[in-house]
Length: 135
Image 1 (cartoon, rainbow, N blue to C red):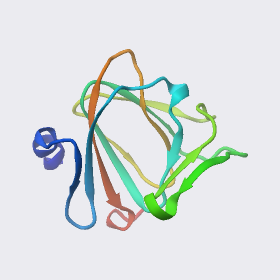
Image 2 (image 1 turned 45 degrees about the vertical axis):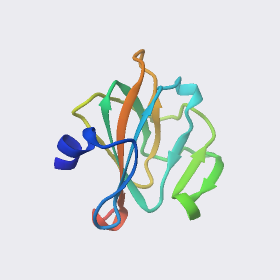
Image 3 (image 1 turned 90 degrees about the vertical axis):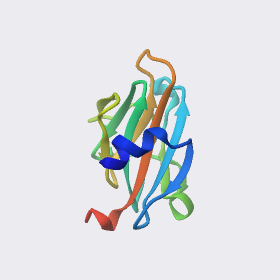
Image 4 (image 1 turned 90 degrees about the horizontal axis):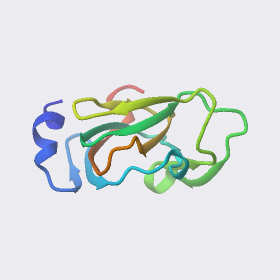
């Protein structure tokens, strides 16, 4: 939490290695329409996402709907899998503003960086090995 509040905002964009196999990715981006953002999941890493500047919506779906199709599988190299469809039954929105964070463990499906009517954003994404939090 100290890292999120005190260190992350002053770091340059890019990857920053942390302790115990964790790393942080800082980036600036323009949120996109929900229909332009794919759902994704991970197998080995937990996402801790926090907006530093701006506002975005993260849509989450804790249950894999029947018939969900994988469009791109990069679990072996990047611990990342993308899915077909931009709206799933059971999804719910998380409005992310500075000061809040979302912890997204495997295998929760999530659709990030969705537009809410506000422009540019900056966020930190901390990747946490699943075993550190016993997920």
